[in-house]
Every structure is written in C-alpha cells, then in structure tokens.
Amino acid sequence: MESYAPIEVRPDSKIKLEREKPAVWSHRQPEPSRAAKVVSKLALLVVALFFVALLLEGMLRVAFYHSKDFSMEMWKYAVQLKRPVPNPKLSFGHRPNGHAFLMGQDVQINSQGLRDYEYSLAKPAGVYRIMLLGDSTTFGWGVPLKDTTAKILERDLNATGMPGYDRVEVLNAGVGNYDTVQEVTYYETRGRAFHPDLVVLVYFINDPEPVPVERKGFLVDSSYLIAFSVNRFDGVLRRIGTRPDWNKYYSSLYEDNRPGFQACKSALIDLASTTQRENTKLLVAILPELHQINNNYPFTAAHQKIKDILTAEHAPVLDLIDGLRNHGAETTLWVTPLDDHPNGKANALVASQIQSWILSNFDRSKNPELQPSPSLTKN
Image 1 (cartoon, rainbow, N blue to C red):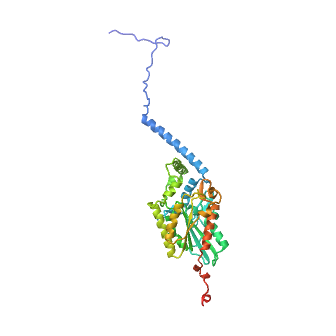
Image 2: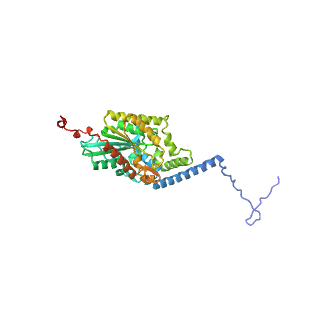
Image 3: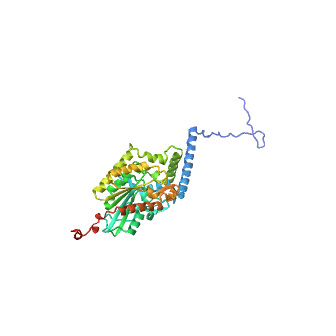
C-alpha cells in the first residue's frame, strides 16, 4: 500500500478548513384560514360596539335623567312605578310607596298604590268621599299633585262646603295607561273598599283599547339605549305612514266589531250596575282629546256612543268639551308643546265642571243629618 504523509496545517497556512455548520430548521407559522380572520374581525367589531353601546347608554342616562320627553318618561314610569298583577283584567298597578321623578315632577305613590295622600279604608265620620277613576290624565301626568283634577276638586269643594259634611276627600285612583276595563276592575276589586259616596270615572278617547300587558325583562327595564331606540323607531314608522295617525286610530277603536269596544261597553254597564246596587252615586265625565277641541272636534260620534251606553243604564254623563274649548289655543292646555296631557289650567277647568255637577246633583236625602226632624213633618 501507498502511504501518505499527513498534511500539516500551520496557522499561517492559506488552506482554510471550514467548520461544520449546524443544521437550521424552519419554524415558519402557517397562514390563518380565511374563516379565522373573519372570526377575529367580528370579535373586534363586537367589542367595539359593546363599548360604543356603553358610551351611548351613559350619555342617554345623563340626557334623560330629568327630561320632559314623553316616550322616555313613560318608559321610566312603567319601570319605576308599575308592577304586574295576576288579574288579567287589571294587568298592572302602582308599586305601593313608589317614588320617581317624571316629566319634571316629583311623583310619590302612597301605601295603597295611589298617587295621593294617605287615606284610611274606613271613611271618617263627617266626610264626603269621592273617588276619581281614570288613566294618566287623571293620574296627573306632568303636573304636581296639587294641580291634579282630584286635588283641585278637593280644595274647591272644601272651600264651598258640602251641606251636612265637615269636609270632602277626593281620592286620585288614576293609573297611567289604564283603560275602562282596568278602571272598573280596580274599583270592583280594590277601590270600593274606600267606601266612596261618589265615583267619577274620567273617560278618555282611547279607553276602548285592549288591556295592555305589562312586560318585564332585565334589558327592557334597565337599558335607556334600548328604550330610546324602540321609541324612536316607532316614531319613524308613524311619520312615514306605516302606523296610523292618532285621528284614524282613535276613530277605529269605536267600530262595533272591535273586541276592545265591546269590553269597554260591558265594563261601563258593570260599573253602573255595581254602583246602583251599592247605593253609590256615579258620574262618567268624558274628557276630550285636546288636539282639536275649539273647532271641528273629530270624535263627537265616539262621545255620543259612550253617552248612549250610559243613558240606557240610567248613569249620568258629563261631556267636558264645552268647558274646555275656547280658552285659548289648544296647546295652552297641554303639559308641553309636544305632549297633550292636560296641564294645571285644563285640570282646573275639568274640576270646575265636575264641582258644578256635584253641587247641582247633591242628594241631601243620603245624609241623615239633613233629614227634617219627624216632629216637623207631622201634620
């Protein structure tokens, strides 16, 4: 065999030996799928919308903390002062001892669920007691308690006096969004326990509506943003004509084939029967819709239908429109330029008419103190 001498490599040798380099492995990540990218973007969008919603919620809470926006204030009223009840003909009522600030007014509900002072169920001696049944117009939407029809009537009757009585109490049993069925149901299940001498049902043009259902839910009750969005969307539908205007809608309630109208009619007949059976006086006072009362009132036929129902039952009816018209522009009777609930001026005109009717129809025979002495009646 041939032998070879080893190669000696000196430090200054021009021969360079390359060191063996370690292998380098690639760790490159695979590209995310298209679906993953979409999910990621949607997640970012949801988070962004959530924070925008929180911001809007906060802004709306500040803006409507003390407002006179009808829709938002009615929502606050339902959330803060109403509660569902088991009776489907009543549906809801006031929370006893509830309190809220609505339409610029401090609203306090007493222990009996009335927007009024405290009254005992037992009628005190020497008291003539009147109960006003009605909806938000009787409740006193947008006015202080002292300017409600009930309290104005109470003051005026006590100022003039009721023969044979020490004082007069007028109880405000109005509840916002009640219709005639609910008002009569309230009286028959609760109101009559106060033993009123006179019941005044303040009838309004939308009373033949079906009994509304009070829906409760965490988001619906808690979110100003949801309430605001729903209310404004409903307003848009009305403006573009998808929903009927107030004139056509109210007129349609009085069609004979409407279940709501038939229920309203039955409730009025029941109230007339109950009060007659219990020897309690009844007055149904028809409050007009205040948009157009000075000229060409659009609901005269509807008023007449209600009058005909009550006349057949021998129940007194008082149409309040004559005492309300021609007291200036209709808007001077509204709580705000955009809300036609009766203001203090309108309530005073209503109370004056009811007071005149009471004094003109006051039955002295119901008060034993006014009966002539038997010795004076003998021949």
